[in-house]
Length: 612
Image (cartoon, rainbow, N blue to C red):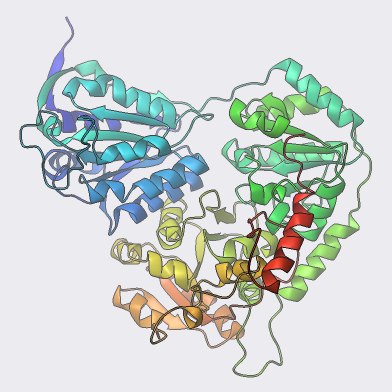
């Protein structure tokens, strides 16, 4: 006879989560971020208090941003460990939907546990309940359905017996990894059930390494043997597969240069002789030149996002073929690619063995060193400039680069800096963290905290513009409370400088992006130093680029976050690299600037080859 133990459903959930282990002997769900309210405080809140350090609870300031911290943690841990996030019903739950979408796009595991309405419906409608006049089963949590990999509503205590294993199966599946939502009805959280004791036996979750079909390996090998100008696009899947060294050996063994996507950057060091930088819209000149003439583009663990492909106008060789090595068939067959479905590391090893001693023809190595000289020029300190000179974002990047070490991790998500960092930052292995799948403003500060929690031995430097900082900065207080140190470089260009440049490029008038162009009576004079200091951070303003360098070095060794504010010029771009990006321009009407932008747009769309 099966022995049972009587627990509330909330107690059962946290007990089960506390014994789900990695093959390295650690909890897969390290802990739970929580903001309590009606819907989770009485049931799940009491259960989390009861379990204590066996499944620790951390208090956040905002449901979205504490979820961002969880996502950054899992991304940094290469999806081998994760966090859970719980909220009340209503706005607490829907605040997390943006974070769920971010995790979904980036394929990052996080467990969302929003409180839900009463399963028994006796007190309906409760405070914050969303009522659907045509569907009695709908609640606010149904907004999670399109942006999670697995959704379930726990409306009976015994549902946990199937829902929890399904949730972890998704989160630990290398192909389907992503967010999970278990909407937890608040009355059910408090209900008791006699659970089988063996349900709480520790379980080890291993990340599988699916092997590719030998026929697909042979197909790709044959294409590589025939190629005159192959190039590899190294994506985030290389990092999650821990195939960094394997890819570097493959490139060297077969004489194939590679470029790193936003998600893949930092898999291998910038000084690897086969690393030509970044491809696409935020691409280096050296990598984009190779991509344009390549007859074989080999994607490894990449989604072929439009920034990577230059909106599919980058690969100009009429005879080019796309190969996609990916864990998921959905990604492997995009845009007519020749698929090779399998783990990146295993697939590259098998492909290399099949190729034997084959080497691709020689490529232009000098373009790589030429590119490094171009980067050095645009990121150089602005010597000899007047005292009122505002530095460019590229010069800010140069300042941080000059004082960076092998332990430095730079991170960002939105605005100017993601593109500038992708094209200009010279990353050491593991030294780059970019959320550019969803490019979510407000990820930066919370994400920096999540990274530091994952790799406390590293120096984490967060690049954030004033626009993103204004959207979400409150987890700075959480980092202060928990003594999680990282450095924020806050570039103040007095508005949304990145989108202002895009507005100009697409023929638009400067409007509503910079404060000077907004419909306001008075431009705000925001004291970011005072604001950050009010939350307990060490905050100061850099007078110039040299002062910024000194202040970054001085921040090392502190036990709380440091915020360094520097005024920057909103107008200049990176000054090097780049490629066209498809942002539609109005087809009719408007002044001459719009007509000129439309002519440029028409010329570029003729280069797009997305489906052949």
